[in-house]
Length: 172
Image (tube, rainbow, N blue to C red; front, top):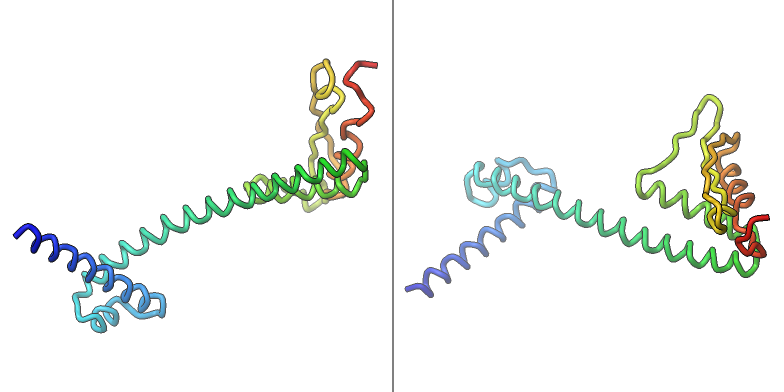
């Protein structure tokens, strides 16, 4: 008896899943709830509940997929940035700093941290880091500045404030 009940419940769940799959397919093709109900030979209220459940599942899935995609993209950017810093430290070529700035910009966009450019002046705030202080014993300071060309400003800021590879961290 218990086995028969379990079998019926399993068959019922399978039938509901099949109906929901069919309802989703028809819904995504633009059919109304009434048209879906007629096609699947069930009540419109049943289709309404099915579609409500499907929309909840889709929202949850989209949120999880987006979070996973963001995490994966952030990891790719992290690896690219590590490689660019390694290349810069061995060659000291400004092109690697440009790559690092572009990676930082992409990461900011990915995380929703974009800096708004004032359309009237085409200016963007930038943060300059005192690398000597970060690498040495004195305390680090952050200076705010404003540049006319947003992209060039970021590149110049990174180039001019990048750590000196010959600097041993001692104060001069």
